[in-house]
Structure formats: C-alpha cells, structure tokens
Image (cartoon, rainbow, N blue to C red; front, side, top):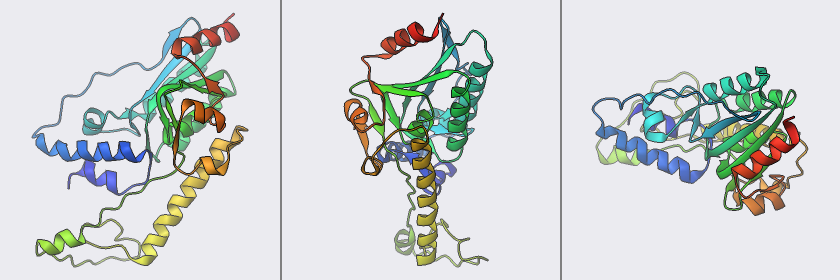
Length: 269
C-alpha cells in the first residue's frame, strides 16, 4: 500500500464519504506513476476586487500536502490559505473578505487552526463565506467562523461529522498465506498495522477520539450563534435551500457576483 493510500485509511477525516472514496480511487491509481507528477505552479490565493479580499478555498483541504496529494487529489494547502487570511487582515485596501468555497472537506489536522484564523479575521473585518459547489465537513467548520454564510440553491452544505476508515486486511493476508507476528508496547500501538485486526479496546479508543473531534466541530459551529438543530448535524449535507432552512447558512444567493455586489454596497466606502 502506498504512503498516500495508507494515510487515507489511518487518520480521521472531516470530509464527505463520496470525496473520500474518490481520493482512494485516485491514490490507487498513483501506482501507475513511476515518477512523481510535475509540481503545479504556485499561486497567490488572495485576490482583491474593489475593496473586497477574495480567498478561494477549493479541493481537498490538507496541511502541507505532498505533490501526489496536490496533483491526484486536488489538495489545497491549509497553511497557504491561512497566509492569505492573515494578509487580508493586514491590508488596508481590504475592507471585507469573501471566502469563496468549493470543497468536500479534508483532514482534521489543520482545520481547527484555520477556522480560528477565520474567527480572528472576523474580529477585525467582516467575513463572508460563500459556495456555489460544496461547503462540507472541514470546509463548513472553516466557513462557520465567518460572520455570515451564503450558498447557491444547488450547492451542498454541511456534512457535520467525522470519518475514520480502517482497512481490515486480515482475510486478504490469510488468503495469501501471510501471518503477521506483532511485537508492540502499549495496547493501542498496533492500531492500523496491516494484517492485524483491531481489538475491542482499540475500537473503543478510536470511537472516543472521533466523538471528541465531532464534539469540537459542533461546538465551533454553534459558537457563532447559529441555532442548528442536533438532527442537522449527523453527517448529512443539504441543498442550499435546506441548509438555510436548517440555519446552516444565512440565505441563498444566485451567484458569487450577487454576493460581491452586496458586500461592496455594504462595506466599501
């Protein structure tokens, strides 16, 4: 199993199940490459239009993704997004900020910190989050720290939950005539070792970790005063209209241009 595919199975994710499945398919395909794919060009994320700082948040969100993750999974670097957020806060020609989001989510690592950066920015400048695609899981956690959230009617919003796939390869090992002799100190140290089944204690520990992350996710989402019913935070995503009806957003907008016009009328002098 490649390192990339292994990482998809052995860490918790704030992402939609469909996006995670697509990443697994792409990671398996990376075995076809004998050499790493070419490094994509760097890009400056922050764009400024008539006093509005626009920060695109697109693709699978990861902290310092490697070249395979960038090219095969379309990963975006949360550190680069954070730098753009900090720059927007420092620039005098930025009077309000739009997070332009189209993301199914990403890793747990880096998400709370990036959400905190958005919350810090909102204390200095008004921050809008908008999506005409996906604003799910980690992407929604980040968006939830904006002052106001909008989406188009057909956007998918929410997916408040945590995902941790664990690949059980014990039967596959048996069929190949392989048996793993494991030596480990600590009853949780062998979690995720290929060919070794999880124990009941390990399953309980993993579930407790997922529950802890999910509790932090829900607390962050509710911290900005959104009255979201617990029934709407069970991992499902919603259309733009249903997201509004369930208080995940402040309303439905026709498109990004409409949001920018609203922002410029209100915040640009």
